[in-house]
Image (cartoon, rainbow over all chains, first blue to last red; front, side, top):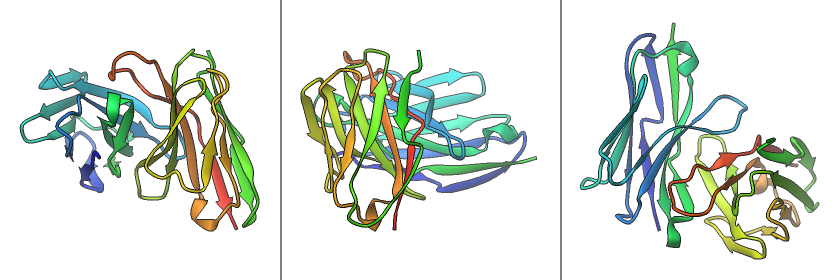
Length: 113
Length: 114
């Protein structure tokens, strides 16, 4: 089955700096890669996603890149703000019919004011 | 729309007790999922359903059971609770069709087994 590795597990940045979180996946059939943000005690919420036929997608300060050949994708957050502090999860579709998502273990991002 | 709702929010069980975690969505989504989230770990799929009357095992199904009698409801049953089932449980749903549709999560149920 699909295996998703996520690095780093923790990341501290100064406010205004950029943050990069990287994920690799194992199943070449995966075709959809969402990123979720989870604040303490809350539910995961989708912040950006990318399909396998796209190399990069940007939404204001957040961007995601995908390298299908190398089977890795990354989340880039620019001009970080304290409210960006949260746990971020990457995921990739898996299973027959791509009904399922396999999640990485998460990255705890701390933005220091 | 209320989205995905879960009850209860918190529960403490004794070893060997049973309980049902409730999940309801009002978005007419065919696909529903149950995940558990342990500290420092990602979300692991317990069971999923692609429609009423259809359920299938995920990565960590042991100790759990599900049913899907309606489109809206997807309850998760714990039989003979064990300390290893202490976790936060999230229910999620998404539209059917292609694989690009967003999964929407419920607020979670924090379960402690003592």
